[in-house]
Image (cartoon, rainbow, N blue to C red):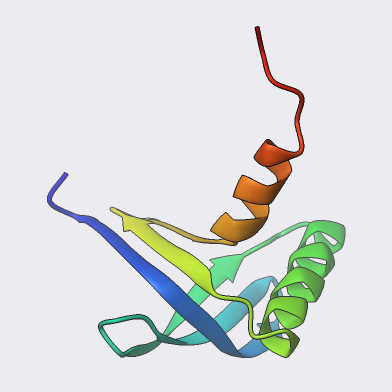
Length: 92
């Protein structure tokens, strides 16, 4: 797992759409990163859904977790995931 990279507290600076590609400019974390990530969403409806989510995260300054492993990259809102899990009934 040498190529696994995890950065917490990353923020979205900008979101740009060009055809099927969505470029997300990110910055922050304890490492003070600044860079861009390109996602490709060939299906227009999925692309627009993801763009709206990314723009909301940008607008609300939502701290995200950036995960990169090989050619796979993800941005996740871990706080929302934990909140949703906490709202679920306990399993016995």
